[in-house]
Amino acid sequence: MRGLRNLMDRMKPNFEKGGRFGWLHSTFDGIETFLFVPKDVTTRGAHIRDVNDTKRVMIVVVLALIPAMLFGMYNTGLQHFRAVADVAAAANIWQCFWYGFLRVLPLILVSYIVGLGIEFFFAQIRGHEINEGFLVSGLLIPLIMPVDVPLWMLAIAVAFAVIIGKEVFGGTGMNVFNPALLARAFVFFAYTPYISGDKVWISGMLKGQAVDGFSGATPLTTASESALTGGGLDLGGYSAWDMFVGTIPGSIGETSTIAILLGAALLLLTGVASWRIMLSVFAGGYLMGVVFNLIGADSYMQMPAYYHLIMGGFAFGAVFMASDPVTASQTNTGKLICGFLIGIIAVMTRIVNPGYPEGMMLAILFMNALAPLVDHYVVAANVRRRNARLKTANK
Image (cartoon, rainbow, N blue to C red; front, top):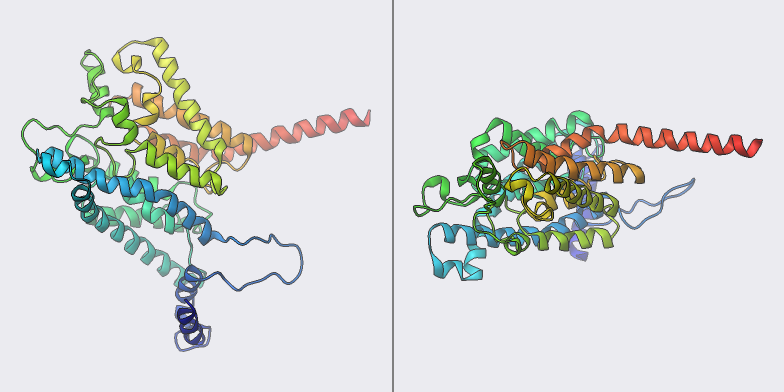
């Protein structure tokens, strides 16, 4: 590392303003501060002193995503070999992982290349520092996509999320909506067949590689369809344990609740994410599930309430999306309110709207829009309470 540091120091004067490559100052600064802790120190006045900067916080989130990503790679291979009825390969952990690795890696590379390229472009135009937010978004976007999504389609979705979701608002820290969810929403509304249905979740099914009779439907889809047909609850043959472990069809990083909870533990231990949001999302989802259990109009409503917490993208959204410090509520009370409403809206959307059995994406985006309003009323209520206490004290 010392040799790399010396190399960066020798190159740095060329990238300073007035140097030969001064127009690339923002790019060089972004690379340098990614590799090394900045040397900037406080000299006077009141400052917040901390060993962490935004890049380090974002790297913690990336590390928290690693368990879900690695399991997603394994599950990609597992689901593929199950679809083609290759029993021996499905039983081989390393063969499943290697297949999934080769399928998922191009999605990650495209996401980072397109997203960071746009980030660097805007930073150069504005003469600003490189925004660090895409370190997380660049990994989140592939993990919430189907494995067979075309690379060109992913590239367009990433460009839409970065330009429309972030840069038009001023960059990282200024965006209203979660950029990763905007990318998924873009694909969902612009290219619906590639992110809904039975075939999109398993590698090779869109190309007709699966054996006859293999559906590839997610438990959410089969549960919703069984309710529409008036039959008993059908989860596609998957158990609650299968859904908790994650050996089910679905988006790359969203299937394993265990892997997601490992990431949640890291975020909570490091203080990067808010436990209030995570807990309230799960609480809201479970309560809404209990309410529908009491109604019990069909088999989907009668499904155990806790199933909603381990199906689809609920756990992933609660841990990595709803807790986004930029787009979430900023007040402690607001975090509890917004998280609770996200859980309620997600489960309500799943059951009431059979055409869209997931619900988590729209619930989070909806509460992203309402979070500032929730904070406003929370702060206003606090001001009223303080004024009331002041009047009481002055009597």
